[in-house]
Length: 158
Image (tube, rainbow, N blue to C red; front, side, top):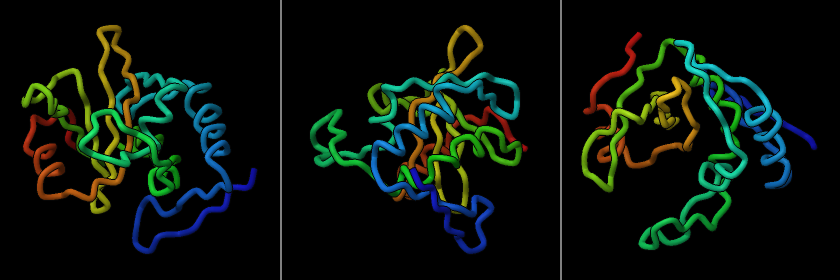
């Protein structure tokens, strides 16, 4: 497994992770996230499950088909190590997530955005005081999605 990183100019999250195969990204996710205890900067333990890999690192081949995650996204996967960095970064604002099905904000969702890249990390807050990692992605729909997130209630602001 070879992991090459490349700098992105003027970005505090300055590297991308490059593996040869999807299996190498999956192994990294399991080793670095599922098999580790990871906490947010404000002390919430975040639990990562192996079966979330597909949701987090695949994208839809057909957005009209709900739940379609058939295409491995190298764009998402190359930012795999950013997830932990975002969770630990006390300089980022966290918001209540938006539930598209119910068309309202959902207090059990925590969304953090890394700007100016609009990298989004989504957690589901549990009654146990822990959080479950849901997904992370580079949002290319700033007008609708990012504005909807930023228009929601703030959970944490630096």
